[in-house]
Every structure is written in C-alpha cells, then in structure tokens.
Length: 239
Image: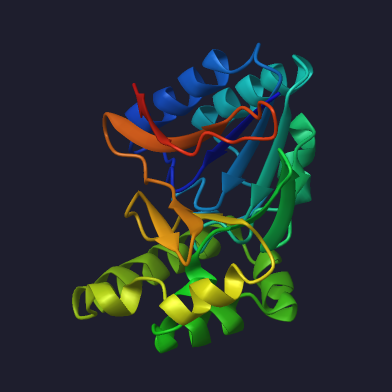
C-alpha cells in the first residue's frame, strides 16, 4: 500500500503543464495500490460541480482510470476549491473528507488538513473564511449562473492577491501555538497552503508542509509503511 499526499496544484486551463504533471502522477502511481490524498487547492478556483470544460474532462477520465485500477482518492478542500463537492468526486468514486481528518498509518496517528486554519494570525482571512463557507451562502451561490460565479471567483482572487502584498510572511504563515495544539493528540501533522515545503520538528513531532506545484516540479509525500516505521521525506515530482 502506498500513501500519497499532494496539495496546492492550482490546476487551471491557463497552466497546461501543471495539468500534464498531475496526469503523469496518476499514471505513475496507477499500479501501486495507492491511496491518494489531495489536501486542498487542487484547482486554482472552483465555481461549482456543474462546471464543464474539455481540459477538466481529460482529468476526470484519468481519475476514473486511476480509481478503476483499484486505487482510492481522497479530497479535502482548500481556500480555492471549497465549493468542490460530492457530485464532482462521485464521477471517479473519490471520498470527500472533513476539513481536518486523522489517519492511522504504520501505527502512527496522522492529522491532515489544508493548513489555512493554522494561520490564525491572519485575522482578516479567518473572518472571510467563516463567512464564505457558511452553508446558506454557499447554497445561494450555487444557484447563481456560472458566469456570475466565475466573475465572483476572479474578484475574490484579485482581492486576495492585493491583500497578501501588504501582509508579512509571518502573518500568512502558521501560528506555532495552533500547530502545537494540532499535534496534541497525534504523532504527525501534514498540510499544505503556505507553499513552504519543509519538515519541521515540533517538540519531537514532525510537521510536514507539502509544496505547491510549480512549472516544472512539486514536492510531495509518499509513505510506504514497513514494520510500522514511516520514511518521512519530501519527494520531488518533476514533469
């Protein structure tokens, strides 16, 4: 059994190389009895499960083949694709996870999440997150035309980029107390979001930050439990 963790792919039709890299990853792990965990920001923006496009159809077809080969796909949402739901995932038998999940692999308990909830110093973002993810608001937005949702997503993205220009790296990074709290009842923490791939030691426990996908490579995590031990090392995925 291979456990594969990725995050922050930000797939879109504007970056076909990233799409090629993801399709190549599925092909490379298709015959490895893989459990694939996608920890948010899979897509650069997700405006609804009713969105259709040829570039997305190619991804869905590859995911179906991956699933039919006996592999399992798990997804938890990020700040860019929190509107992605079961309707889309059901096309290839993927599982929608809660924002925070705990796995048991090789006798180790592992907490997985996107990572944005750990950035508690970014107060303005946390307030916005709570508002935009309100089920009533999400339900209302899903009733709006796709064109309206597309404009809204573009507007949110531009405002986010502008806001980030005046925020310090410290504010946009994880809060250390939040990290320690997250590790209280588990052995390992895995997340993305910050785009700063590294394995940190937090009072003797690993915090593994997955890398965002760049034009040529990403840093991913592959776990192959042997004798209850886990080899914790980020792996370069080049495409």
